Image (cartoon, rainbow, N blue to C red):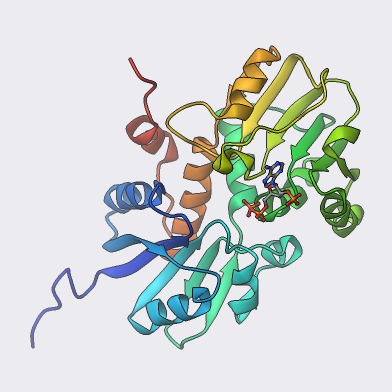
Length: 283
Ligand code: ATR
């Protein structure tokens, strides 16, 4: 009998989105695989709104075992799955697909867990009884609201360009804690402990018009996005005098680690991954 080669035992994973060329997920998952001794490949997959479902199905038919789903397909992915975790269902956003051997597909959302791990474990930031402002009411924001409310903040205000979208999310999670929705210009001018930026304005190189007075000496400004250079939101946070200004690289690592765990049953070392992979500021 022939022995199976490592190539035969190698499982295929990837990240699907649009745009996708900038994604660091392949580097992250390759490092996780090295750390844990798992044999996987991980690729970037570009799709359009029209062919998203077909591309996922084709990937599964070709033997793919799992996908991370990123902008702008987190909501579309909810429609495609056969089973969905409670957290992803409530959020209306899926960022992890588990492609089963029987052809079915399970959807999960690891964004909230990833954010909480970064805030609590890496940044040692308490959330209980704190005032939290979330900017944005799209897929990225939806995934983090319920986990944040689980930390029992004093208030969680969702502010968005389109007020109705912020109100809709607040209504969805009303039972889970003290959450409200408003438009960007209705944000009360008083300091928040934590301001989370979850809009896609930065991707279009647009700046948000935010009222003054939101940042106090102990405010942490946290951008869910990450990049080689500080985002306009991070620059704004610095200008406003925030105590800490943080990008979403830690969250990216933590949500990826949770996806990896769902796929492979092994927990990677994210602190080590952060030291290896965090973009270095220009010298
Ligand atoms: P994602 O999955 O990354 O959240 P999305 O679902 O398309 O992407 O949501 C994008 C978010 O960014 C929304 O909150 C959007 O506001 P609207 O609900 O008003 O569309 C916000 N957004 C996008 N471009 C923006 C801009 N130029 N200024 C302010 N908010 C913007």
